Structures are given as structure tokens and as C-alpha cells.
Image (cartoon, rainbow, N blue to C red; front, side, top):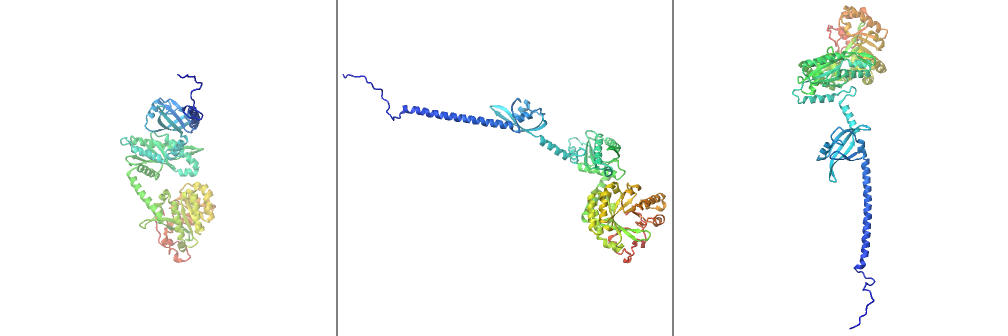
Length: 608
């Protein structure tokens, strides 16, 4: 048996360069550690980035100009940004913070809900527009709300609504709002709701404006509105529908006697004086009434019926009331037809002029002619001004007619010269309303100047124009003087002037109204007035014309008892149509005696 010696060698170990499993373990650990460290670093970076993003988001939400809140089902606020805190305050609806029942209802709503709330904050009451949306956060049902300050927009909407539906001067409902109110009554579920419309118009308001100024006129309208409003029931609605016109809806209407009592009370109240800026102003109102359903079944029919009844009062004594009836309905239909015919006549230029001579009663010479507008209807018949002038003025057509008349006169100048001589003046009538309209008179004077005949024209205005004499004297007269035209006061004695007012009026001619001339030889009072006018006009340099002379006795009195030299009327000649002017002059010679003086005279007294 061999002798065995113990060995000094260690167990076998891998030689240098050996890459076995045991040698790879430390490297793997190191690699994993590096990866973990990298992941940890990235995690920390991501966490820092997330915190930074969360901080930015929180800052954005904090500074949003929108109030953001999160509320639990019981209404308890879980979150509110700065703007929401600024908006916080008592709100009038169930969606307000702290109202659990309202919050629960909105959380259970399937979609976004929108509400408009008013809240009282440090800066005053605000209007908030809120959008509410249900959500689940960490398995918890919440309500997320975004609130926008809607105050300025709401105020703008209110202002726009006020301007659209209310009168700026009086604060009353306007035409649009009162029409909507009436239309709502018409579709009311009440069985046969009975109500009345009262159309009120302030009498002589234009004269108040002209005399006292428009500022006082406006103050009067406000006081009239206040006085009416304090004398009607809370259920009645008063509106201002135009300048001096008001519409009152009387609802409900139990019986006609109640309406009569109310209207009578208003009439009496409006006749009481109004104290404005130290002036005691007296006025009245004319009232037209219509009742639903008796006089119409829609707003426009009822308004027009009340308007028609009001104008019936205006045509009489004013200051009263009238209830619409069937006769007025027929009159309204007739008026509408007249309006249509008149508008068509203006459009088609179917106006012409008749010319009536002004005569020197001492020499029988024609010294001038007055152009009198006429309307030729569809059948060729001639209508005199009394048939259409009032309606034309009301419809605002009078200005167009004045320009048409001037054009007709200018085109007739050769015939006028042939008939009466080139020296005669030509008078044209201008309404008082036109005479005080600066723009119209400026346009009219420009047109008159362009004719090259301006120095032959006399512009006749009624004495009403001189009620606002400061305006007429200071602005209108200089225009006429500048182009060489003269001015005549027509129908003197029938308007608002007194003899003393003549001293303040700068006119070239004064025409005494026929009411003073008719039977002058029999009427001592008229004779005295005539002589007073004559005595005052002469030193003021005004030529006096006697209008409406129709009899030999009247001419004889003027010749024998006055120094009046000129007259006009049927005694000398009726108005002569343009087509009849040819041959009017006596044999074409230079003797301009009135054509009508050489033939049998008509005793007719009808006005032109």
C-alpha cells in the first residue's frame, strides 16, 4: 500500500481570464445598482417635474379670472380658487354653495347645467354666470363649478333692453313694449279679457314748445306722464309712443262706466296748471278710446280706432274724450283713401297753380298775383287747398308740395308776364310750420334764388309764424332779404298776434283777413279795427292788402273811407288756372287792368 502524503495545495481556482458564473456576479450587481440609481434619479426628476407641473397648474387655477369650486354632495366646499373666494356671498337660488339639496340635484344631472346668480360681494352686487358639471374624484361624487363675472355684460343687456323698450325722457314703456303687452293680453287664457286703449294727445303742444322752449316742453311731458301715472290703477299700463302722444292700457275693464269715470278724472287733472321753472302752464289733452273686442281684435286695429276717435276730438273743441264708433270707422277708411291719393299725387307731381290778381283799387291796375296751389285728381278734376292742405301738413307732404308749386310758378312766368305785365309781383304761400323750419327755408331760398326771379317774389306766411318771431326774425328773414324776396303776413287778425305785435314784425306787406272785410260798410266795429291796422301799418312801411273783396259796396267803402290802395278777391277776379292765362291780358297791350273787371262779376263768397 502506497504511502499517502497530505497535500498543501488549495482547491482548484479558475485561472486568470476565466469568465464563469462566479466571476460575472459582481458586474451584474453593479449594473443593476446603476440602473436602479438611474431609475431613482429619473423618478425623482419626474416627481420634481410633476410637482412643478402641479404647482404651475395650481397657480393657474389660483389666478384664473374664473371662479372654480369643487363641492361635496352635502354642499360642503372642498376647493375654491381666489376668484371663487372673491365671488363668494349669499346667492338667491338653490345652486349656491352650502345648499346640499341643490348640489345633489346638479350632481345627479346628466349634463352640464348653467345658472345665472346674483351675489353680494365687497365690490357690490355681481351677476355670475355658472357652469356646473358632476364628476367623480377618488370615487367621490362632486360638483365642479366654473363661475364667470357677467356683471358688465348683464348691465349692457339691461341698458339695451331699456333703450329698446322704454322712453328715454319719461322712463315709460315705449311703443314696442306697449304693443307686446297688448298682444300678450290678446292671447291670455282668461275667458274674453276685456280692456281699453286710451290714446292721449297734448293739445297745442307745439305752441308751448315754440313759446316756452323745448326744454320746458320736455319738462311738461314728464310732468304730464307723472300726473297720469298717479291717477291710474297699478294694473293699468301707461306708455309714451311719440312726441306728445301717450297710450294707456286700461285692464281689466269691468264696465264702461268705470272707464268713463277714469277718463273724466284724467281730463280734469290735466287741465290743472303745471308749474315749470316759474311758469304756470295750462294745457289739456284730447283722448280717443277703443275697447277690446268691440273695436278690434288685434293691437293695430285697436290703436288706430283710438287714434281716430282722438282726432275726432281734435277737430272740435279739444280737451275732451270720444269712444270709437262705426261712423269713425267709415271716416277712417275714407281718410286712408285720401292719404293714398295725396301721396300718389305728390309722387306723380299732379299739382298746378291758379293765379289771383292783386289790384290797385284806385287805378284798377294789376300789381301782383298770388299763386294758389291746386290738385288735379285722377279724373282731371281740380281740388282746392281746403280739400288737402290740412292732411298734407299732417302727413309731412307740405314741403314737397311747396317745391312743386314753385316749379310750376317759374314755368308759368312767361304766361304771367304776358297776361299781367313783367312788373307784377308773384306771391307764394308758405305754412307757419315751414317758415320756422330753418333747413326747409334754406333749401327753399336756394331754389328761389336759382330761378333769377327772386326779387319778384313775395313769400306769404300766416301770423302764426310770428309766435316764434325771434326765430323767424333772426334766421329766416335774413335769408329772404339776401336773395331780394319780400315777406307778407297772410290772414292777419285770425291768429295769435295783436296790433301791438306789429311793431316787432319786419314785413313788407300785411293782408287783412276777409273776416274783417266782408260787409265792412255795415259793421262799425270792423271799420274801427281796419282803421287801426291801417294807421299802425303805414308808419311801419307795410303795404296793406284787403283780402276777400267780393262786392261793389266793399270796394266803395275801401275807396271812400280808408287809405287802403290794394285789394284781392272775387270782385276783381277768381283764381285763374295756368292754361287760362293766355289772352287774360287785355288785347296783349300794356294796360294791365284786371281781366275780370271787364266782364260780369260773380257774387260768390266762397273762400279760395
